[in-house]
Image (tube, rainbow, N blue to C red; front, side, top):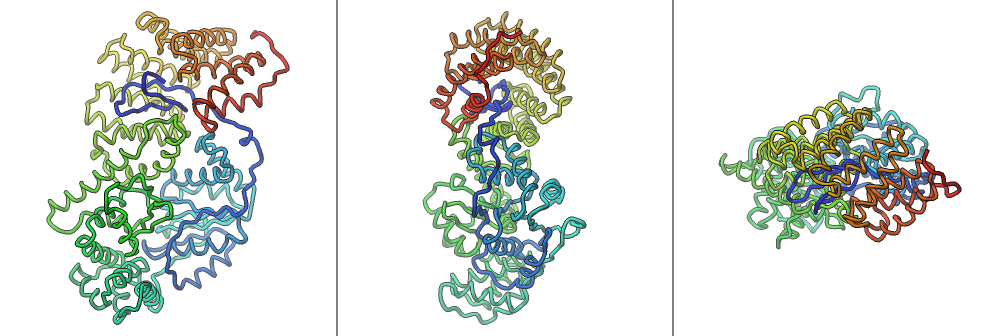
Length: 638
């Protein structure tokens, strides 16, 4: 941690509104007592989203789900009701299955996040102390050792994304929903969900249309047939007819004016268009809000991503009344993926205006992410905000072209990469840093200090992801660039050389790492002075390298020197000083000086609780160390 921008976590990068070169530190692994205890799933653990308020039919399909004992894949068109069926059936299982857990599974990252969420729900004390990777593994181990549970993997696009889960978690029930029908051989039984039968489609239409009172339903059969008897299209049309007292025949005329019949999904496009045309004339923000929501993940879009303008809640209420979104008690919003996909299309009309409308909605999404994203990973509330935001940032990145990333969004992406690194998502972090780097190279140029800083963060992420050769190559190229652009004695160039040493540590080349770190440290003393912050951090990091080389006495001596100097120059409670103090206590413990280590940990625990709170990783690590360091012996390092 350096200057006014702090970094905490596994090779995390501090990214404020101005991103400069950041030097990242080793993570403090958190293993509190809860992490060592047997996992006991609390009773009644249910996580199933509210889907269709009006549900008809599907009795045969529900019976098949009841009878099947293995994995079932519900496949079919978008909007045909796959998720609604899975949610309806899953909620009926809560009386005899535990947990019943829903995971949005559009990508491998979504699956991993869902498993981590399950582990955190079973042991809430671990939410802020274990990385997402560790929580995911914890959930998989529990699932593989227990039965009586149910997982729903919703909207799987690639069976490879869930292959590891399916291979390891074979003792409970798994239900998958997917538009893919031909890639599940040998994995599970495929239940292809057709459109509703004609009579059930009409029943659904009548239920929705007459929900607020009697309505003229003449022509409902013809309208449902025109909509391909696709449940989502039928429900949206019925909500419009009920809300506006429009007859099915009049609605058919509106559909005819909006385009030809087309297939079932095109019928849904036209149904949405009819509703949006009306809402645009009466509710100013409705159309724009739906287009904004299209850029985020479909489930639980949080309030902090919604514009704080007057009229927004009214617009959301109208969209919900027309069955286009679902409003939740906490103010968050869910949208069907197919509705989102349609919302991301340019609206009909003049080509120039179509493009402008698309750019406006995408720009609003960038602004929403930028306003919502915290830039500090120390505050527990900010870590919780990132946990909520990350799926929506990832969705935005999937849906958009990197060339469209604006300058205001790029610092947010750098912070997202830092949060991913903090949670052990190194591969994902590397991907985000690569995109961020491309953006800064385009906006600021390849030699701007900000761009060079992101290159350093990318090198760190590559190393943590196990891509050692790439990390060393990236760090070496960074040193060359910084030497050429900034000069060999520039502070950022010196820190880049520390990054290169770290890359060698991660590659297991510790002797080479020690030589590199000793060389840069000598230059730091010469250029910056022996008491400069970065010089002292480099001393502490060299101590860690010596520990890896089994140079125990040198490691302890150098670590103690760094702590003493940092305490005097920076203060005992400065962030960099605290990291060095925690590391030194670990060096003492590793050297066998456990009484000294315990005394240091006891003092550090009080400081960490006061500064960071009970649930911060540093607090958790120090507390765990106190439970594991034995006070029965104390010997000098040999």
